[in-house]
Length: 345
Image 1: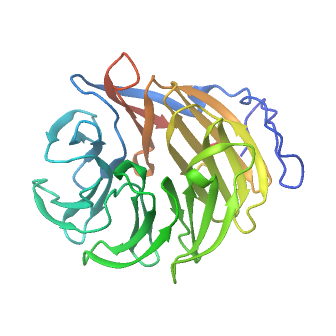
Image 2: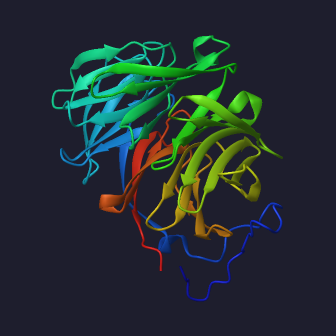
Image 3: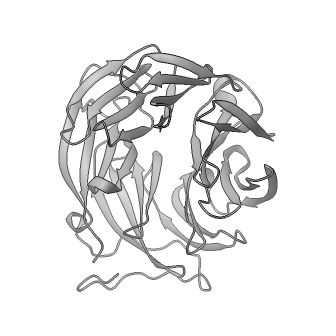
C-alpha cells in the first residue's frame, strides 16, 4: 500500500526489534473517520465485547458491570433495548443455525438466548468464569476461556464446544490464574492464547488440544490481546505494562518488532482487507498499524476516540469500526462510537 508523501518507519524481521518511533505522518481522517455517537447515560462500570447481527441489523454490547446486554440499530446506532438477567456478560456469539445468541456470563458459564426475543432458552455448563472466546471456522467450534482469579480460582481452562449442538468437546488446563484473549488459525492447526500471569503466549494444537510451546514475551508484561495474520505468519500481541504492540513470528515465536500502544487496551482487531491492526485504548485514542508485508510494519496514526473507549468491533461489510466507551473511566458517560474505515491506498 502506498501513501502519497509518506515516508514510513519500516521495521524488518531480520533487523532491530527496538521500540519504534511514533506514528508516521498520516492524517487520522485518512484511516478512520468518526461518523456518530450514541450516548448511554445512567450506566456505570465497564463494558466488554460487541457482536453484530447483519441480517437483523443489530449491534450487541455486553455491559459486564451493569449486568445487561445492550442492543442497538447497527446502521443508525440508535439504542433499542436493554436486556437484563446477567451476572457479568463478556462475549457474544450469534448462532444462525439455531437462531440463538450465545453469551458468556462469568461464573454462570454460557447462556443461550432466542435471537428474536432475546429470552433465555438454555445454557451450556462449563467451568466458572467464562469470558473470552475464539471461533475456529475449520471445525466450526468455539474455544472459551474459563476459571482464573476473577472467580477466585488458581487455574484456568480453554474449553472447546460445538455451538450448534451445545456439546462440550474437550478442554485444555492451564496452571495459571490469569488467561486472556486467544486467536485461532482459520486454516492451520494452531491457536494462540495469552497466559498473562506467566508473561507467555501458549501455542496449542487445536486438533488434539495439546500445548506445543510456551513463548516468553520479552521487555513487557501483562500480555492481554493477540491477533494473527495467517498469510504472513505474524502475531500482534498487546501488552499493558508498558503499553506496547509486540510482533512475533507465528512459527517460531521470534520477536519481529515492537511499538508503543495506547494504555488500558481491551480490544485489538486485525483488518485483513486493509492490512491494518487497530489497538483500542481507554486513554482516548486508537493506535493504527499498517502491515505492508511480513517484514515491513509501520505505526500509521493515532485516532482520537474518548476516555474509556477500549472495546471495539470491526464490521467489514459496512466498513465500520464500532467502539464502546466504558462509563467507569471517563467523565463523559457511556457511549457507542462508530468510525468509517477508509480503504488503504
